[in-house]
Image (cartoon, rainbow, N blue to C red; front, side):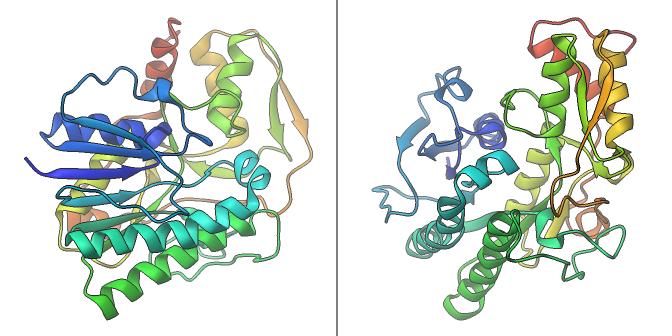
Length: 313
C-alpha cells in the first residue's frame, strides 16, 4: 500500500481527492489548517488508513513515515477567501510550496502541484493551451492568488530541474460539486444557495463572461492519472465542452432546481476574466483523460447531496 499526503485535504476538492485515493487502495494523510476547509468534509471517512493532521503549511512539516505521493492543494481558492487572506495566500503559495517540495524531496515522493487556470489571468488566447503565458495583473485584487500559483509553478519546476524532484503541475479550471461552501462566493454554490431559497440570482456585469465547468469526480480522476504519469510540464484539467456564460448558468440552475428565482445584475468585479476555456489536448494525449459528467447531471448531483430533488434532468 502506497501513502499519499494531501495538503488542503479537508477542503472541497481535497476531500474528494482523499475519498478517491482511499478507493484506489492508498493510505491517505490529510493536512489542513481549516482556514477554508472543514472537518465536516472528512468526518465520513472512517478508514483505518486515513490520518488527519491540523497544520499550517507555511510552517515546516515533518512526517515520520514513508510517503509516495504529495498532492499540494492547500490554498484559499475563492476570491472572497484570498481577498480576505491575501498574505496567507501568498505565503502558502511560496512557503507552503517550498515546505511540501522539501518533504517530497526528502521522501523521494512524486509531487503534484494543484495550480490554477488563474495563471492565464484574463486571457487573450482562447481556448487556453499550456503554452500560453497569460495576461495577469500582478497588483490587482486577484493578483495575490494568480501570482501565488505562478510562483508555485516556477518553484516546482526549479525543484525538478535543480533538485531532481519528481514533480508535475495540474492547471485546474473551474470545478464544482458537493461540499462547496454555500457562501464561498463562487458562481455555482452561490446560485444554488440563492435558487433553493427562491432569492434573486446575482449575475455580475451583463452575464456574458464565460467559465468552463468540470464536475469534481472527473477532476480528481485527472489529478490521479497525472500523478501516476511521467509528465512534468503543466497539464490543463477542465471541461472544454461546458463553457457557459454566467447568465446561462444562472438560468440552468433555476430550471434544474425548480426555483422561482429571477436573475439580477450587479457590477462586474475588477479583473474578472471575460472568457475561460481549457485546451485539454495534452491531457487527452498524455493521460488519456476526458471529462464525462455533463453540467445538468453535475448540478443534479449537488441538489441530491443537499436532499433536494432535481427537476427535468
